[in-house]
Length: 164
Image (cartoon, rainbow, N blue to C red):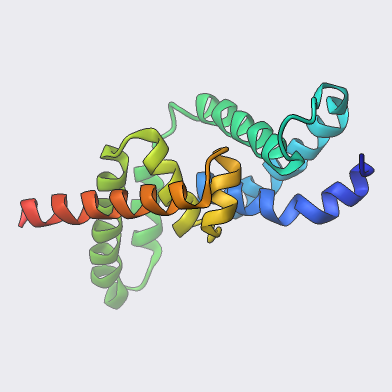
């Protein structure tokens, strides 16, 4: 088994990317990455070795993210987005609102997908992970990740056409 310093150097960026695709927040992703490795050091004796260490770290990270969601469930993200738009210049306000509406529609369509497909899409788009990495995280094959992403993308396109 590698020492934790080597593991941190090798996987910290990947764990951060994974968390960023879940949180869409740079500082929160950094904080959760640090907490992930803290828990990994604390619980290394629980690592059975039946999966790659990277997958184990991502599971810890995902559980931390779920805890964070429970803590912040009552806060409304939409209000803060509107406030950010209002702080922009008057000229850019209209463009920002249109862009925000389009992004919101996309995320609404993604949210309608089943959880597995949604995670694959988030990992691919916002986490910028390869299909191979996604397959490892989800404990599936690279081909499975590609197919799941493609099918999710098709469902989003179909629902967009139905709305028009």
